[in-house]
Amino acid sequence: EDHNNIYLLKFKGFYFHCAAFDTGLSENLDDFEIRDDDVFVVTYPKSGTIWAQQILSLIYFEEHRKRTENLEAAHRVPFLEYSSRDIDFGKRPSPRLFTTHIPYYLVPRGLKDKKAKIIYIYRNPKDVMCSYFHYINTYPVFKAADTIEAFMKQFLEGKVLGSVWFDHVRGWYEHRNYFNIQFMMYEEMKKDLRSSVLKLCKFLGEDLSEEAVNAVVRQASFENMKDDPLANFENTLYRGFGPKLQEGHFLRKGTIGDWKNHMTVQQNERFDKIFQKQMKDFPLQFIWDV
Ligand code: A3P
Image 1 (cartoon, protein in one colour):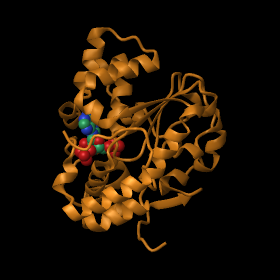
Image 2 (cartoon, helix red, strand yellow; image 1 turned 90 degrees about the vertical axis):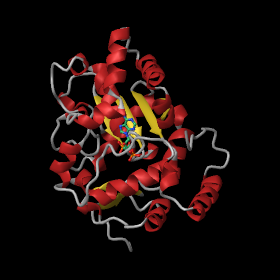
Image 3 (cartoon, helix red, strand yellow; image 1 turned 180 degrees about the horizontal axis):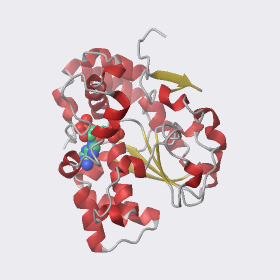
Image 4 (tube, protein in one colour; image 1 turned 45 degrees about the horizontal axis):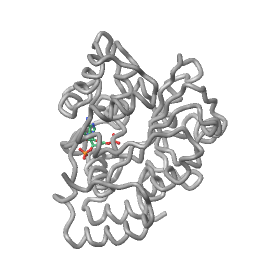
């Protein structure tokens, strides 16, 4: 490999963070035991993962909604492939909540019986790319590409954690009939968080009072999460990666269409061409600006 992203590790055609291999879980994902009431958040990185973690945590834990107990959302909805060193998943009470970036073909076999639920969040890939660019430039571990131009190449070739965006989204969508899966669009969540929360509650079979729904919506807003150390991921990342390389936050902007502030007209045209080719006949729509 010609890139120098030492944190990346390719396994069965997919780029993981090398931490996934500390415990051997990645090798055994296929056999990972699934319970009927497990819930999985699945995303390509930078598509709203932490947001979904916060929303799920708020939906399922009254102590979180009422703020009577303090535990990071990321710990309540831990990463399947990165947390098995800290968490004994087998001992977790049901319903267990998980997060993962894995592609459809690497999931535990048990997920295909359609009982456990999957929430797949997707976001327009230009914003994903720009969000990703800022993120990897914040931490020394990533040895980031220092221009959008260089990163765009890396992103389109899939030499990032999560591999090729097109493959991830297409793969999950095209195999949706094997799973009990709800697709959610980042931009729709952004435009109407309340409706998105209600849609999720319906899918999950969680009947929350109006007051509880209000609490979820309030505490899952960008502004609220950014100021909340239990939701903004800063502590978790600090533990994982150490000090930042430059000033920057995991909850950076949280907007639709920020790519317009980063991509040149020419880069945008190139991106569009590739998008049209890769996503030809793809039925899900994307929202590119407000
Ligand atoms: P930006 O970098 O564009 O701001 P992930 O968790 O998958 O890595 O995604 C991170 C992106 O989701 C960041 O995008 C972050 O700001 C955004 N995000 C996180 N919480 C959000 C919220 N409550 N509302 C809107 N965007 C949010």
